[in-house]
Image 1 (cartoon, rainbow, N blue to C red):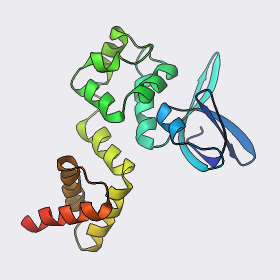
Image 2: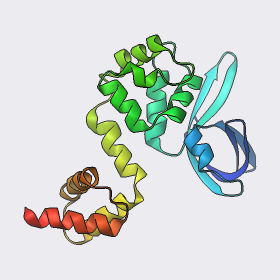
Image 3: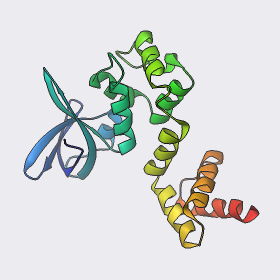
Length: 195
């Protein structure tokens, strides 16, 4: 229904943002990482999920489609509601959640307030076959990193194809902590020239 909202951030209040878009102020519940990166007066784009239940009509918002997709997956688990989904995304990174599910580590998930061991085990049981290595991890790196995108464009402009450049950049990012796109390109070129 409402998949994305772009507008001016008017107010931050109790875990929610009020964003004005098209003359309407939308009250959107967001995870902690969105709250810490937000300042009133700035333009913001959120990927949203509208939850309609008997006693609830609430928008939930995320900075990336990866977070929004993971939220949808989490709340698809029986007895896991949107509040727990937001708590998980507030307390753990996407990679931590992915790791806990993939390697069946309920103790990581059960650290989240309001989620006990049984709930954590249920998430792992129901989602372990739905989260593949590439879906979250690779997409997360691609979407979260502007440096990665810039480096990929630079390598493509040098004549490397997208698949080859992406795989080398992913390898370089995992091997070294490189933040700037120029550093990524330099290191990727070293690898590409060895081939």
